[in-house]
Length: 113
Length: 110
Image (cartoon, rainbow over the protein chains, first blue to last red):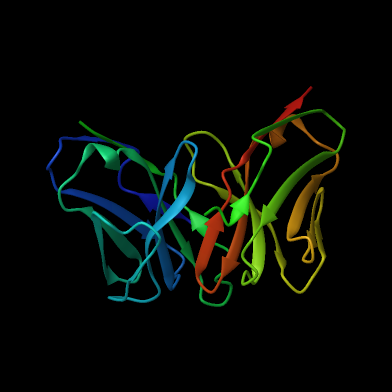
């Protein structure tokens, strides 16, 4: 079974803090993704990576950066957290051969005060 | 602009009956479509997919139909079971990227 884990289920941070969300997958997938999910807006793609050290912007990259130093790990960074970044963050991965099927982690619910 | 639309926010059906979840899309470049199932406070789980060159794909109780001319797809669940109660996300994909609809909450009543 594919397993995608996220470092925290719940996180509370203050405005202006630097926030790291970590994601690890154990299936040697090439592609990894970060989404956020908000009520009434659905899942929106923030960034994705198709290889180590490679990254591409998704639909809403503003205010975020990412890091992929190892194949299994993809980090989402909020350089200076703001209240409008309060959301559910979901990480996903997919293999190169069947890249249409993404496997999701359990999500991190982030509250920025 | 919403490229994938699920116009019914919720659907309620009786156990054993058919559930039909509908989805419309506007992006003709989608190469494939997927349905994901999502429980509260969990990540989405892949359910079934269909290539844009096909019009039907079946997997057990789940069948997805694609009508490209109408830019419409639907998910049929037969027979519906209480464990099917969840949010269903319709998704269009091209290359690496998936575009999600907002979801339909399915409730299957015993």
